Every structure is written in structure tokens, then in C-alpha cells.
Image 1 (cartoon, rainbow, N blue to C red):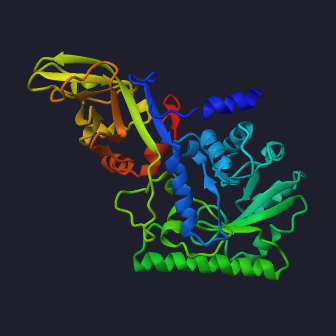
Image 2 (cartoon, rainbow, N blue to C red; image 1 turned 60 degrees about the vertical axis):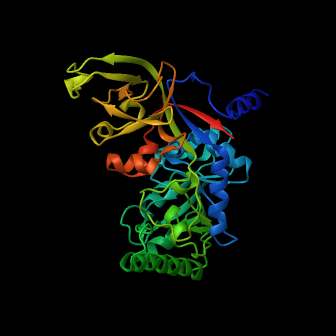
Image 3 (cartoon, helix red, strand yellow; image 1 turned 135 degrees about the vertical axis):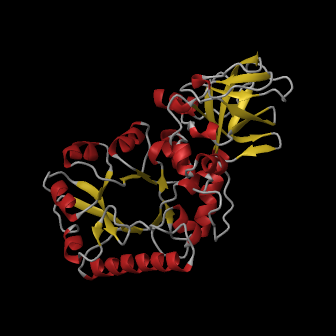
Length: 392
């Protein structure tokens, strides 16, 4: 009963946040958009291919437990996280199905892997041997390095790869690799991606020829789905695209999958004040207005995930459907914006850093480009102090 009450509170549907909001800073996650993206990505893939939802890094800032719970409710039963604590957190919130840890886990954590029914990636034959020696029954996926040169047993080490399927205590339920340039579709990058796929499929055939079952095979993440959907695998692992985003504003999407951003980032106007000309604003006196100015202080800062570089690169927010330029240094907990030309701004107003306000929109891609990084970094660094509000 307690769990049901908790779930009901967690998924309480609100058409829009209260005005003024009870939160100092918050993200709104549109669950309808999340479901739309899931279905759009599924439709791009072969019919037999299932979705393994990547919910690492707090589901790219969207909230891993609520997102995974919602996806569970609409039929997703495969999830991927980066490390063991993320997997444990999902289990503690009642998430069912397979939870794959994509990265290395120390053999010293086999008790937790078993207790929470987590599936561990074998990142090398040596890693697999160490896990097996612990003597606990574990489900594992075998990672093959087909050219990214990060994690995985190199594809040429066939004997070492085969050994991963022969361990007494390890039950292989999947085999996978990772495409390193699937976000690019120029001839050179396409040729490299196709070479990686060929290497992977050749390894799978050799595994089968040796009498082993590779389990569910998967190699596509978001851009592998968007640009190479014809690859025939059992699973696909959308991350950033599941949340309706691309890593960069100018990235191609050959399938023209229509994605809908699920996340908006907002903060509250804490105070509005008039500042006389030549009076410095903020730390370091970085901004000194040449004329009288009206400033709004917002309840969000770099400790919440807003990069300090945003102020240096012409960053702005939306208030009352208009642009308000960030002025002065972004602080740990606040930032200041110029609202001189915006009529009627007052304490309690909502400022939008990512999202739409009236006819104006700031996309996560635009935000990231202005900060000189990728969308993945911006949304995944949104801090734990920022409330998550789930809407439908």
C-alpha cells in the first residue's frame, strides 16, 4: 500500500506548474513527449527489435527512477545504466525487467549484482574471469570492441571472446558493441560504421559456430537508430534521442524521425531591482551598466548545472515571452538578467532557460551550442537541487 501511495504521488499529473512556482528551480518533463519518442524510434527499427532505454546519468537529467517507472508502465522491459549504484536505485524504486550496467563493475560488488538482479557487462575476458571466480551466478552481456577502442574485448581476440561464454557461473544473455561515428553520414564515417557492424556480425557468427548462444545482440545507440536503422539486432539502446534531443543542433537525422523534447528548465524570479548607471553587478564587477538598468535575480546557478560560460557567450532566458540577457557572473545559486525592456516583471515570475515561453523558444541544442558543448552534457549535469515535475 505504501509503495502504491508513493507511486501515485510520484506520477501526479499537473497540466502546468503553479504560478508562482513553489520551486526555486525545476525541470518539467512531458511524459507524452517521452512516449511519442519511444514509439517513433521503435517504428524506425525492424519490427522484432526491442528498445533498451538508456537511463544513465539520472536519465540524462530527466530523473532515472520516474522515467524508468513510466517506461515500465508502457511496456519497456530493458534498461541500461552506466554503473552499479544507478542500477540499484532503479530496483529500489520497483523497476522491473533487465537492467544492464554498461561499464565496469568491480568483482567485489558481485553480492550486489546478484541481490539486485543486475546484468553486468563483461568489459574484457580478464574481467569475465574475475567475475566468474567469485562463484556467484550472474547474468552478463559480453562487450566486443569493434573499433571504438574504449571498453570491450577486441574483435580479433576470438579465443578470448569465446571463453566468456564458457564460464560456469556466468550466464550470457547478450552481446554488444558500440558505434563510434554513427552520428556522421559522410562517406568515410559511413564506411567505418559499416566496417564496425561487419566486424560485430562476424564475431556473432563465430560465437554461434562454436556452439554458444550470444543472447540478445545490440550495437545501435541513438544515432545508430536515426542514421542506420536497417541494422538487424534484437535490441537498440536510445539515450539522448529517447528524450527528444540530438547532441548537436546541426546533426543529421536521415530517418527524419520527429522527436519531441521532453524537458524544460525553469527558475523563479526572486527579486527585481533598479540599478543606477556605472554601479557594478555581481561578483568581480564583471558587468557595469553604462545606463540605468532593471535587474531580475533568478534562483538558479552553476551548482544547478548552468555553465558559467553561458553569461560570456550572450546567454539569455525567457521571461513573459521575451528575451532577458544574462549579465554579470553566474553565481553558484543565482544569476542576474536584464529586464529593463520587459514590462511588469515581478517577484515570483517564471524564467525559462530551456523550453518555450509564448512565441520564443530556447532549445537544449541552442543552449549547448552557446556553451560550446553537446546537449548530452547540458541536460545530464542538471543538479539534484533542481526539482523534477512530471506532466502529461
